[in-house]
Length: 146
Image (tube, rainbow, N blue to C red; front, side):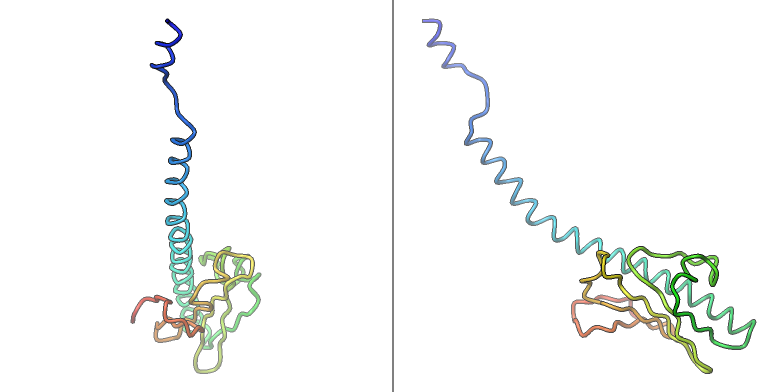
């Protein structure tokens, strides 16, 4: 008789209960993971915009001290701090400065092996008037306004 009573009061988790919990976790993960990736892209884009502004300050300093707009297309110079010692580098973007006699553009190119390779904004361009544009036709690209 004791065996029957002990079976009636079993404590434990059934296979069905485990499967239900796994289904709930899988559903939550399916919703959260894409949003997290999108959040990471947005944060990396904002960081790149901050670095563009840092480079713009350096370019403006060069214009004041040397009276010309510099042109730097070699990212290693930027990464080693040989061009702009205070500017930070990014593991998601490669930066270049296209200078001419009268103007300049600072461009952030997403690296192919980074999380930004499929960013809807693609390349970011900072113009001398402070406007940041994207070299992408995507409408889902959100950039700061003037």
